[in-house]
Image (cartoon, rainbow, N blue to C red; front, side, top):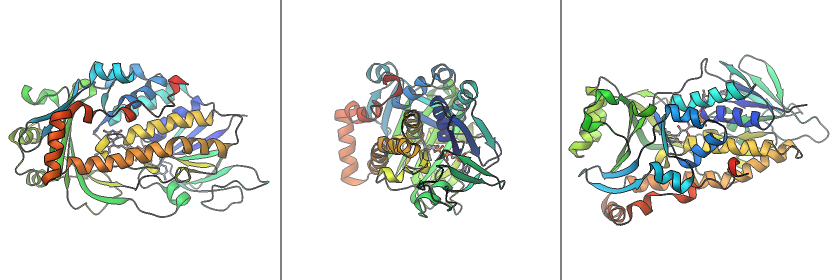
Length: 415
Ligand SMILES: Cc1cc2nc3c(=O)[nH]c(=O)nc-3n(C[C@H](O)[C@H](O)[C@H](O)COP(=O)(O)OP(=O)(O)OC[C@H]3O[C@@H](n4cnc5c(N)ncnc54)[C@H](O)[C@@H]3O)c2cc1C
């Protein structure tokens, strides 16, 4: 009989996990608490490490139809506007890492994973149904262990008051994960003191000089901005990160933003940067505000799986967006879920353990590097001066991240 995995959360991580677990030969039931699968209007960058996972799942063509493939990453000084360094992307990335560097609307990424689940699997997807709690075979709430002599099942209660049994539970329920709370105990995410202002503008509504085909990162004291094309280049994604006080309701990650606050935070930056920012309102579009939270880097495999329950994506390792890899690591996690769940000769807790052992150190490294990047991006004084000099002298060498882009060494297409 096929084993059954229950998945809490139908975001990018949960949908990728549904595809991966189905490919491993498991029955899948995915529960998304929101009534309709949706993703906020914003972009994400996908390194070649992530694009390779999508290719291995047969999603290359779907990606090609919706993503943009920038030709370079350009770093500029937010104050002077001058170029500090360049990393060629496009063909260079394909030659170096066997896959492209892509930029994509979040809804398009979610849509292509969802499409893959519908096309290639018989996973059952439930919307408007949340996971409330889980218990092990002894009936003890929040326990994920395996009770000697008892059946090895995890029993889940839903917000509809139903009890469902599965052979494993994957918590892909995001930053404020209920699965994590029950599995690892209460510890709220950290408020970073960084605020992300985000906007999407049709490139056709911008003057030609402000349209872009590449990723541009503007680095300034205590702030930075990133721009890139999404949706085949038809839209431009802008994200400005400044330091400031987060709004009260942190569990909502998408808030109304006041463009005047953003303008005030950008006083003293270059005219070129300010033109880009003003172009949003000029095109009749608005800004959204996301307060950024994270958690300290994962400390051990135990933080990612215990007994019959595993965590994936932001539920396991929410990170600052300064390496642009949060969704990427959720997708890499899912690729490892596929490998681990395919080990049909192993007991389920050992398979989840294998998943966690394979993933935790890489996730921890990406979390730690994201924190460090944030410090470097927002540097002031001599550190800023040293950063700019290094970028001018060694640009490409500093901006390339081979250990990350080569993947975790266990890509499915190589296995
Ligand atoms: C400003 C910013 C820029 C970013 N840029 C990038 C980038 O360029 N590249 C990149 O790779 N990443 C980026 N990220 C990170 C990326 O957005 C996240 O890492 C990614 O969305 C995490 O996906 P997830 O599926 O794990 O969690 P989520 O997207 O949070 O999905 C969790 C899902 O679970 C559901 N849920 C919650 N609780 C329950 C429950 N109890 N039962 C059932 N369902 C539940 C939620 O409704 C939601 O649909 C960025 C993040 C930010 C904030």
